[in-house]
Amino acid sequence: MLIGLKKEILLSQMPGDDLMLHIPSELLTEGRHSVAYAVENPINMVVEFSAEIVVIVDLTPPGDPLLAPIIFPTQVQNGLTSEELQTMGNVLSGTIASYNGMQEGDVVRTYWNDLPGPMAVVSSDDVGLKRTMVDFARSFLELIGDIEAPVYYTITDLAGNLSMASEAVDVKLQLTQATPLPTPTIKEAAGNTLDPANAPSGATVVIDATANLKAGDQVIVQWQGPNGNDTREKTLTGADAGKTLEIVFAAALVTANAGQTVAVSYVVNRVNGLVQVSDTLALQILMGQPELVLDTSPVTLAGKVYLLPGLPELLPNFSADTTLQRQASGGQAPYQYTSSNPLVAKVDSNGLPRFEATARPPLRRPMLWARVKAT
View (cartoon, rainbow, N blue to C red):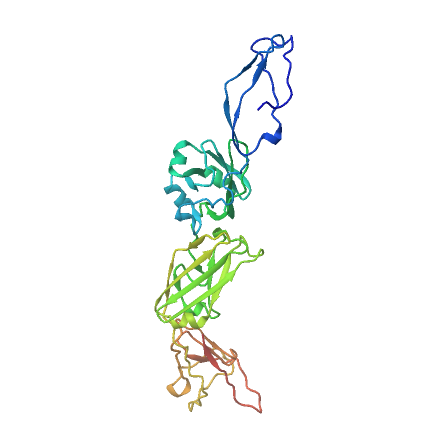
């Protein structure tokens, strides 16, 4: 069947020049077509036909009606870490399963969070294996950052037909090399030893600013002792980010574990999904000191002491019934004794009071007294 208008060969056109002929678009229907052309001699009207060629008209987008999602290794299911990617040779390979109309020469274009990714061209081997591989290098993945984002692809066939976007698969990247967390410390402790007497309001767990905590990070601090455990949680705000964090545990928890070793640690659930665990502080809690005891009850002494009015600084030897020594117990020695009225009496380091002769009782109240206390 002859189609289109005849086209005259011009005198300016020489043998070997290309001649352009137009095929009407209504004839470009889906399927296989045989195409040839004829040359007519205008003098003798002889017509010669060329050999036929087969032209395939392809108007169907590849993969119609559905393209399956990229298939990734199982390691990406809970987030891909830097260590996991390293075991893969720093290349994350994805599999494109066979699709309707798969042909050698099809071009696969990938997109990660709408950012164009690596491309792949379907080979004859791919057609036979019914799959195509695409490789995402570490350098590309690090450009994406530590986020969870959709990954999908499109296919363009040799006819230029563009497929719809495939089903997306969400992939979480956790490639940032996390700095190890600092070991927690106790504010009231000396190194790893805590005296309960120094923590009357509780023990303060300190997480240094080098933990690089960010807004949205969740911190879980654990206090694990033989005689009492507790857990405290805190989600950081913008005001907390990048600063030293302090978490207080009750004083009762300290005293309950007196004489024991307590394990103090914490976990950080990063806002990007990364989970970090600190080293454990082995905290030695000293035994609590017994309560300080000193007998401060009043006592009347039967003995008498005579002083020389002109020499008040000259004191006689005190007999047994003219003085009393009371020593403190418990608490933490050495003790410091004090008198409530140093003009009447002073107390030495052994708890022995000494009468002060410079004191003079009023005429109507011939008695002087002082209370002794120990600290």
